[in-house]
Image 1: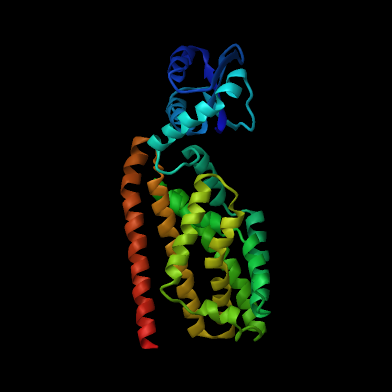
Image 2: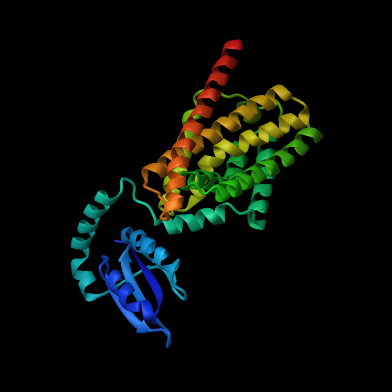
Length: 339
């Protein structure tokens, strides 16, 4: 059983009504103390599955009450007399409730939104990791070293912005969607600049398998992208470490981007087109899987205008990505027929 602590700072004049509402929620423990002469502090220890419902209510209250603040704190350990004796029974009961509430277990919407906002911002750390991974991947392809290419994919933070695109599309948050798209393009642009420079100044690596495999695209690459996107989305929903899953997403994005840049630098436009098609297929397949997973998980906004916008954005996003994937599949088939 995973627990989280919600701290709520409530102005005195609103305390009675809000306190009564909060006590109706399912909680493990509930504490009230005087924070100051004007505010009361309520601490609620709840199961992770109950967090989103409580935060949704507190979010609505915070829009109309001045001086109202809420903090969400992860709990590593909680020991009490009743928890030691009733832990097994509580876990069984919680599993039944979780199955009723959602098809996919996930962190609260508020935690996920905070993570998405971080992933959609261009930072120095993100820029440096993309730069270093691009250099390592390009050198790995030139040396025809699979181990070096895998090392580059380990450090490439390419999963964050792509997952952020899918998540913001589900919520209908177009401002966040735009930031996520820009961050994703920014990362790919850095990879292209580095690989174009290598391709222009050297002809090494243009005939080995590591390069040639990333300049060809087949229908089998679509399931690879879908699997990568699904794994990335599930890891994100459960707030798991994205390093290992990020490698799978980087497999679909980093080496083909490097191959495209090397081809452009070398003037091999045919190979560049194949690599570009592979990158596009992988991105759209990842987005298709991620949008589908997020939709199934029950990610929804709270405010009425946001709900209305999301109800339009969600099906449009899924339909748009499916159409693009189908078009790309037809282009791949047409290219194979020509060959």
